[in-house]
Image 1 (cartoon, rainbow, N blue to C red):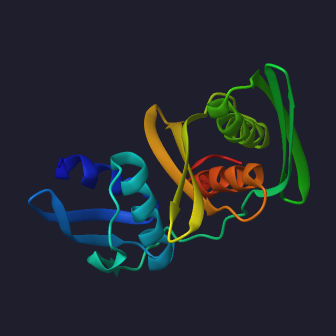
Image 2 (cartoon, one colour):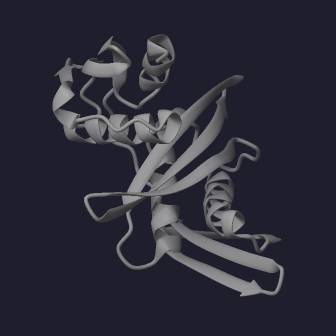
Amino acid sequence: MDINAIQEILNKIEGVINSKVVAEKEEIQEIHILANNIRSPKQIVRDIESTLYAQFNYRIDKNKISIAAIQSEDCVVVKRIRLSGVSVISKDNVIECSVTLIYDEKEYSTKEVGINTAANRKKIVAAATVKTVEQILGQAYIFDVQDVIINSSNNINIATVLVNVMLGGNEETLVGSAIIKKDINETIAKATLDAINRRIQRITL
């Protein structure tokens, strides 16, 4: 188990200032997190669980995670991008996805077209979502969808989306998740926004 690699990716989670992972015999015993007050400890714990499972296929007991929060001067109120709707149409070998988002009471929509494979049916929704966000930002080629993972825990199905982002010449991996209730496509779009909205304040709107 590469502890340094785990700590490196945990440090990329929004709100995390630093992390310390204690492990014995390939099993994580404790995770200590120093965080700011931009996000709640519950949100950070959820992200740690999703990140470890998505990146390392490792399930962590949330009781092993401890978080110490400190006051941050960077805590600001930021308008979030919200989901309005998702439309997916499949015909033969082609799949078409349109995603509509709302920002500052305005609607933005883009369309993605791709090959109709099982893997791409999930990924195209996330791709259309990030493309719409780029339209809102007025900037292209900021985001790239790395993966869309569907997993379950205690009979609860969860969509986890990994998005790579380029900011100031630096690449980061963002992780977002959402519980699947009815429409899996809407859930994937929401998980994508869950990842992106946490970094949106660092991009000029």
